[in-house]
Image (cartoon, rainbow, N blue to C red; front, side, top):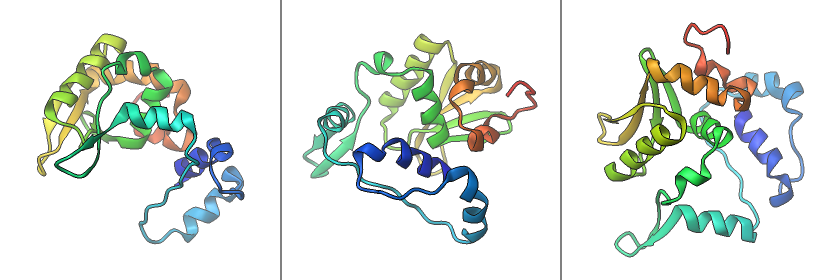
Length: 171
């Protein structure tokens, strides 16, 4: 929830939300009031900058009669440590033996493409794992996890740092 509020605040010039929580002051009160799991989000104005990114990551699928999320061919040029950090804060799941990045919306080929991008751009070794529901995911073992921590540590917000504590006192 705190991550969402921070994103909303960062995007405030581009959305219609006018009032924001004082994240640091009100966070404990928000946590106390949150007894049920729910999802929330916000919409941005249809500005050209967002249209550009939408067209990079979504293509029309005639079979679905809807847009489908894709991996742009130039993902290696687009990704940087901060974007990698936000991707992990959003979809990363820490397990005892490594990190899983949820890539459920992507095909096996696209996930393998992302794994190759992580190796090429950051020297992070990943592997394709298929979960019990048949979703393709990226698994990063502990041997690459510590390198990943070092790459993204400056971009991980405080409330999300718990995702990165594997007996590593440096994070």
